[in-house]
Length: 338
Image (cartoon, rainbow, N blue to C red; front, side):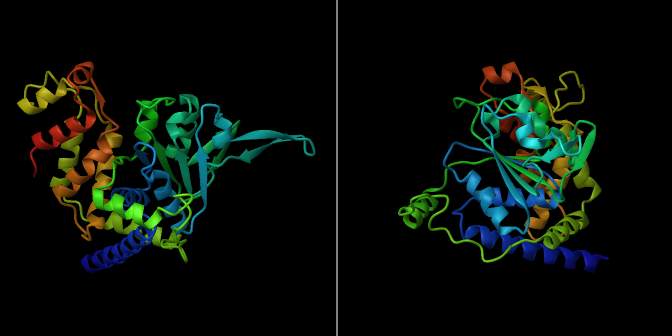
C-alpha cells in the first residue's frame, strides 16, 4: 500500500513538472498561478485571479487551456451581459413545437470567466449552480456539465472604475483566490527583452505547444494521487483549528488573547466549505512539493489563498486598515502548530 501510494505520487509529480515546463515556455514567472491551477485540477476546485490589468492573468489561463487536451471556452464579462449568455437558454423549435436547450459557453471543461467583476451580480450568480453542482438548470431540465469542469476567473481590484463586487456566495465557490502582483525586476526585464517586438503581447512571438502537456488521463492520475496523500489526524485538526479561528468569538473564555484581538476585526469567517478547501489544498501543496504526506507548512502555505476571500472584515478592521490577508496571517501566527 505504501509503495503503491509513493509510485502514484511520483507519477503525479512527473506530470506536474511537465505542466510547469510547458507553461514556462510561454510565461515569465507566474509560478503561483500555475500551482494554483494545478491545485484546482487535483481538487476539482475553481480559481479566482485578482490583479491590475497587464499582469498576464488571462494569458496564464489560456496557456494552460492550450496545454491541456480539454475543451475551453472564454466568457468576456461586460456590464450588458445576460445570465443566458453564460449558461444558455431555451429556444422554441417551430419544427417540433418544443423548447430546446441551447447550451452556453459554460459547457466546457475549462471556462475562463474573464474580468468577472465587470458584470452585475445577477450575471455573476449565473455560475453558482454550475460551480457547485456541475450542472445547469434551464426551465424544468437539469443538464450536466462535461467532466472535468473548472472555472478560472480573473478580476481587477474592486477599487477600479466599472467593477461590481462579487457576492459572498459566489466568492465562497472559488477554492482559491490568488492575488497576482507585479513581476520581479529580473522577470520584467525578461518580458521586455523577449517580447518587445511583438505587436500583440498575448499572441505574437509565443510558441504554441506541440501537444497537450496534460491529458484527461493525467488529470485522473493527479486526482488519485492527491486523494492518496497521507494526512495525519493532528494535521487535519490543525486545518480545522485554523479555519475556526477565522470566526468571531469575542466571548469565548478559552480563546487566546491574540485570537481575541483578531476577532474584533472579523465580521464573518470561513464556513466548513473553507475547511474542506484548506484540507484539499494542503494535500495538493504536498504533492506539488513532491511529497506523499502533509506537513503543517503545507497548511500554512495554502491558507492565504483558501481563506482570504472567505473572511469579511468588520467596520473596525476597515477603520484600522486591517485586511483579510492580515487577519489570515495573524491567525496562522496565533494557532499552535501540532
